[in-house]
Length: 325
Ligand SMILES: Nc1ncnc2c1ncn2[C@@H]1O[C@H](COP(=O)(O)OP(=O)(O)OP(=O)(O)O)[C@@H](O)[C@H]1O
Ligand SMILES: [Mg+2]
Image (cartoon, rainbow, N blue to C red; front, side, top):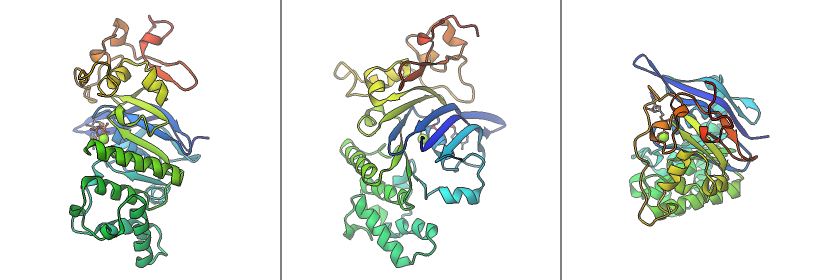
C-alpha cells in the first residue's frame, strides 16, 4: 500500500469574496521509500498542495474535496492537536524559502534543537543539543560551524540546516518545497546529492517540489506534472523524459537547457499561466498549446492511460476526439 495516497484533492482559498481553486481534483500516490517530483510553473498550486499535506494551510484556505491517506489514516478533517502528532514528526517539511527564514539572532544549533524539545518532551536541553548536532553533521555541516549564526552560513549551508530541522522529528515522509531553487548549479547538485543520500540512509519517502524538470531526473522515481491547479501528466522519470505525452510536459522539457535539442535554444514556455481566479474553459493549457484543437477550448480532457505507469489528460489521446461535452 502507498504510504501517502492523495485522491481527488481539491483546495480552495477565499480572497476578496472570490474563490481560488489552487488544487483541483489532483490524485497521486507515493510508495514507501520512493521519491515523487511535483513539477509545474509558478502559481500552479505546488506549495498549496504541500501545505495541505501538512495541515498548514492559511486561514483563508481549506481542503474542500478529496482525501489524503497517510499510512492508511485520513488526514483531511484532523483537528489541530491531531495534526501536531503528525506534523514535524511523521511528516517533515522543508519550506519554500526556508533558506532565508531562519531566525537571524539565534544560533543554528539552537534553532535545530528547538523542534526536538517541542516534540520529545522528556528530552533534556543537552540531549536535544546533541541530537541537533548529529543532525547538522548528518546534513554535512562540520561541528565547529554548528554554533554559528545563520548569516555566517552560505545559502547552501542554510538550506542544509533547513533540511536538518525538517528531519528533527525522524519523519517517514519529507516534503521539500523548492529546496534547490535560488541556489547556484553546483550547490544545487550538492543538495540533491544530500537528499539522495539521506533518502537511502533513512529510507525516507520524499515529495520533491520544483518548477524545474531539469533537477528531478536524478532524484525522483515518479513525476507528477501540475498545470494551473490540475495534474496533466504522471509517470516514471523515464516516461516523462523519454516519452512525454502532454504538450505542457514537452514544453517544460524544452525549457530545460540540458534537454532541449539545439544548443542555446532553451526558452521559457511562450505565454503565461492563467489566473486561477478565472481559468480558461476546457483544457487549461489550450491558450498556450501548439497542438490545441477546437475541442480543447471547451471540453476538459479525460485522463488517458498509456501504460501501467503513465497517464496524461489531453484530447490528442482520447479515443473519441469529438467527445460529447
Ligand atoms: N494565502 C493565499 N490566499 C489566496 N490565494 C493564494 C494564497 N496562497 C496562494 N494563493 C494562490 O493559489 C495559487 C497557487 O499558489 P501556490 O503558492 O500554491 O503555487 P506554487 O506552484 O507553489 O507557485 P511557486 O512556484 O511560485 O511557489 C496561486 O494562484 C496563488 O495566487
Ligand atoms: Mg510554491
